[in-house]
Length: 301
Image (cartoon, rainbow, N blue to C red; front, side, top):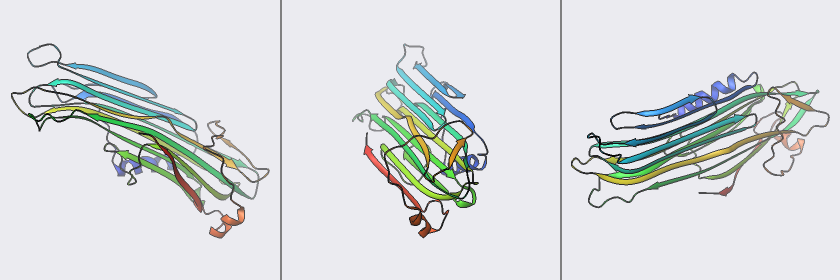
């Protein structure tokens, strides 16, 4: 089962998550795999955290031994404060004339939560998030005798974290990469991305948290030339397992917080400096997003 999510759909999903974040709602996952394009389509999909696997041999129309193998694997998990998703697709062998056979794998995970502060007055809050993914794609060289026939792999990745402070604004960090799935417009390269932001909000303001993660992979063998057999291999792999993590820190003395999920939001991507409250007041007290940073720490391909 091929899962394609456009930019508008991604925005709609994220908007719905923010709007519905009145309590802990999770975990939520969806995984799907399949092989498509020949005499039939075969696959597996499920709504729930876990994995789906497809391993299918393709035969020719005369029942001869299998001539190509297509594999797909998808896995997703969602726990408070952390999401993971992995998608792998492989294709290898010979395909008959006039066929375009592809294996697809997709995985997505999401989570929403609500944080409640205790105490009174204005509170200085630090928000932290980190995402990491690795993607690899391989293709067979084009056969000079069959230049129109191709074999290869594709993939796509997307992640988003939102902290919503009601009338005091919000932080949102979104990344996308690859040819498949959502297009966020920033086209990040594989690696680790660290985010942090600071804001002043009243202690009475709840903080709504939403997280979303998506991975998709495809591998294909394409032979448009009748009267031929084409052999090749392709692989698409997007590894975003244990990738999306988030945390919160309260700097104002005497203020504590609890979450609906029970998660303590203790994740810290690195030791960071604490902005002085006067610095935030320059931008307007409580203006969420007054100080926010995004940094790619390293690249891994």
